[in-house]
Image (cartoon, rainbow, N blue to C red; front, side, top):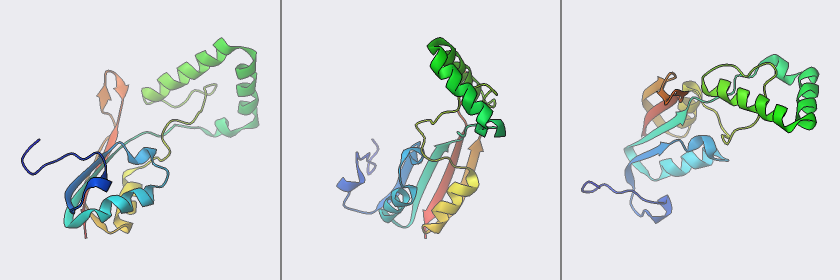
Length: 159
């Protein structure tokens, strides 16, 4: 680590105010984003920075995925054949990772992400909590090993 720079396992161990907090790929996993960001911002001095990065991850669900016909099809394949269900689930996951819509006969399911953000929603949330957005960046087509792993980055300063 550099001089006067530290990495702490928890904000609870930090006694002084902080000049910069980086929260990368965390906010999409928390139960209460308002409480999470309020806590982070409370540890900043006025004029200090918070950088937040979240994935550009949102299922591409179509209207037919909410239909009774879709529910019946999903029930049929999930109870009739484990292999058939796994094949549908696998195809859906591949389509999603490569940026395509979930197939009409694909499996829509929850991911480990509790929250989904776009630049407007994350910026509005942080501004309502007493910060000013300095810079935003979206890289929707970022890829790692062929997988689409787009990201949103927001740099704010505490008012």
